[in-house]
Amino acid sequence: MKRLYCRLYQRSLQLASYFLPWRKPILLEGENSLSKLPELIQSKSINKVLVVTDQGIFSLGLMNGFLKDLTRVGVRYIVYDKTVPNPTIDNIEEALKLYQENQCDGIVAFGGGSPMDCAKGVGARVANPRKSISQMKGVLKVRKKLPPLFAIPTTAGTGSEATIVAVVSDPRTREKYPVNDTALIPRYAVLDPLLTVGLPKNITSTTGLDALTHAVEAYIGRSNTKETKEFSRKAVRLIFANLYVAYSQGGNVKARENMLKASYYAGVAFTRAYVGYIHALAHALGGFYGVPHGLANAVILPYVLEYYGEAVHGRLAELADVLAIGSLGDTHEKKAIMFIAAIKELSQKMNIPQTIDKIVDRDIPLLVEHAWKEATPLYPVPKLLSKNDLSSILQRISAANKEEI
Image (cartoon, rainbow, N blue to C red; front, side, top):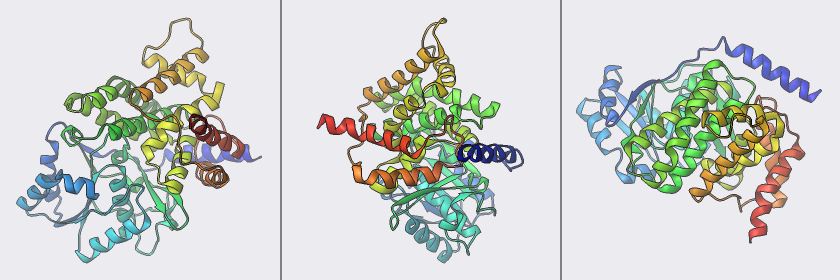
């Protein structure tokens, strides 16, 4: 009965989604496209913006030219730079206070997924001053229009500039959960590859595999549309062609540009088609241990794909075809296995660990509970897994590491 309920819930949500106000952000793309944003903001009669970022971005000076140009066109700003990885409710409330005290009328998210999640959370609270973030957890609980939101990604991975999702952590409960609402899709996004040229190798690799996880989970799920499948295929093709180049040749602007576009495509795909157990487990690890989201996804991805077994062989075989992996007479199973092997090979070439050493056996039941609550019944996964299944996956991710030690 539980399985039937999950599938009926997912099918109902899929049907309802055709009536939702889906949209994509207006894009500014290419080298130096960031320089066009200040005048765009000014043209929208916005007087003062809250710029949400983190201390790393702020200290690197990546925003200096942008802030100077805001002043030049007469747009005032206040910067919130205390966003942490896996942004917290406290981050959102602190930034919200700045927004209100300074009478801002627009929000700029400048950074990776964490500043964008924080900025979306601020927007949701501005739109719903009587609702806490925890009260907006889940699906379609924001509902009201946000202040103008401009997203400037400095990593190629989260795709948050295109999504309905803000992921929030609550250190008090060690929980990490998504807020999902079409109102959270930014109005404008800047895909400027020059902002990603200086990314460290480990950030390039893990955020790139985060984007791959988005594309793959969207593609193998059961709520795809023709458009989401096409965007997933485009993302997979671009990631395999460009991620290692961006990782090994950090100054390759074209590879950086292609990775930003891949991340965007994957974001558009999963915001409509959803993700699955990989993300649910990654969020649990992020909330519990502070494991960076991209790293968690990168490690978990092949384990879950293998665990799904024949339920995903057909779809993974199609993605293998996108990459021209395998031969004409190969079975779906063989192509799927080769596609997973290609993911592992790419991961190993970029020195991404195969296990997560922070997992403690006694924590696994609680990790499973958090992941289960997030995924069930929401995510239209290709195969419904039990709590025992999720526990087994986590034990595999941690057990191999213990054996190596």
